[in-house]
Length: 198
Image (tube, rainbow, N blue to C red):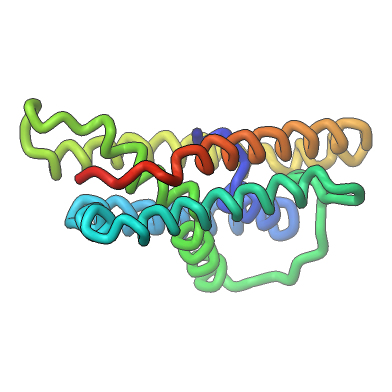
């Protein structure tokens, strides 16, 4: 799931390529705080709100599916931009980079759906306190995400220069990214009618 390109990865790669690895790592810290916020909200009862108001949960999933479909179209449309294709971006302060990473993750439907729909499926009430399990599973997800995304931040510049030397690779990268995003959007769209479970 972490390897599926989404808003976080696009933001981190763009910052790493345009402003350097340090900027990418600061931005990564912001996305980590976004995960902590989602994990906390999910474990202190936001899931209960979605159970009580099923249409809100279904609407949230529908919005996430549409957003992922939009990202897929941006990658697949003629003249679309690839994840590792350099773009001109202004230089930002460390505080702004951190805030932008946090906001990008808080507005990321993939992160929200993971904490509100995916992780709860692995919580087993017979194995002890569900809140503790939720925080433990969330902690594992955050650790995996930080390791993978840190590797992407470190390697983004090298991959961007490789793609600049071989433009055909950018086309394939866009096709693969767009196809993966589209597949996730379709899978999520199929789950829209399912109600939330606490």
